[in-house]
Length: 479
Ligand code: GLN
Image (cartoon, rainbow, N blue to C red; front, top):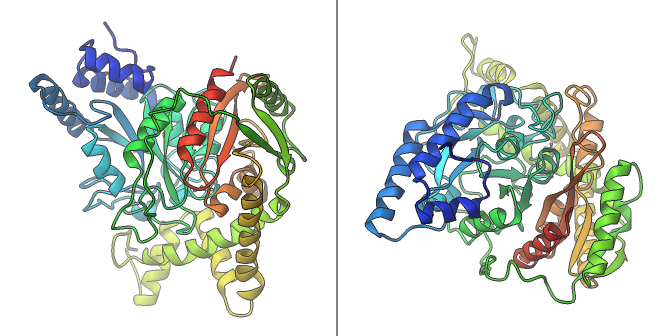
């Protein structure tokens, strides 16, 4: 009998435990699905077949021998290709890193190994995580699993497409301004951007270091919670890692939070939001009220400055983070260079794609003397105002509810020629990264074309347990 790869993590764990099938058989089933369907989808950049099968056999052996097993024992997972795995390529979907092989494991990968998860392969993304559609991958095209003529969102589009297409039950993504929630919304899956500092960034290729977080992607809230539980926690190797204990997010996941107060930020409902997304919001609000939640309107008055501030700060940080890719180490080196300077210039010009170059130029400009105060420093001031907006909101409510995106998945080529329109796809997601708060997207219905709608919940710093319980409640209030 063929194994159904569309099961949730919880169902897979139960089936493995009951002995319905082995992890080896499950891993083979996922690999078969990938072989059959991923050529059209384009979610994966590389597959680690031999290692995945060996790891699966090892968990089967441990299970048979009655040895202790990790919490994700035998479950396949896909990894975004900006997260390092020993002996595996980390391309960041860039030509400049196409041949780079990582000599070490990211901390999240070490934790996944301890949890006995099966690392299946690496997923496509916008180059260096810069983009909102995965169209800026320097290596391949990824299609939306619901409609192949549309983008999967980005930058973690390979990871969300892999889960959305039922190739794997779990994936890791990373978010600097929305790269987990936005593609999760477009692909009809669930994703969480944790609190800044909650998950180690050691081994994640840096984009905007003050904003970056690795986070879980799954078919449902339970899967997200299980994966979050494994990857969260303090890490000695990341100086920005928080020393805040992680609660057991699974313990009360099924218990709806009592006396729930949900805030609706007025700034997130004004402007151009697709009518079907507005309708989905209204439906959920009504159901939350019926379920006993109190709904309160709140204001985050500095939201209108979030996109400009984000694209100044993220590009400023990116311009210095990407300086290390210079043709000397790690990367592509030009074949013909007249001298050292020429070697740097040619290697970088040949290796980086258009969007990455645009970001480096923007970031360098806004950090340069004469412009630094006007751009970078003011963007930092706006960031502080946004943090204060959220602090004031969370004094009144427990969680905030908003659309994840203003529209559902758009067609290929729709926004690639107009950077501003691409940047605006992140309008509802960047503020959580700027404020450092946890935020998630979960599917809530579909539009007239059957494209998934994602709604977003935001929580206060380090309140992932509460956020996930609220998300679980929302899941039960779906059609
Ligand atoms: N789309 C946003 C950007 O291009 C966010 C990307 C991300 O979160 N990595 O910067």
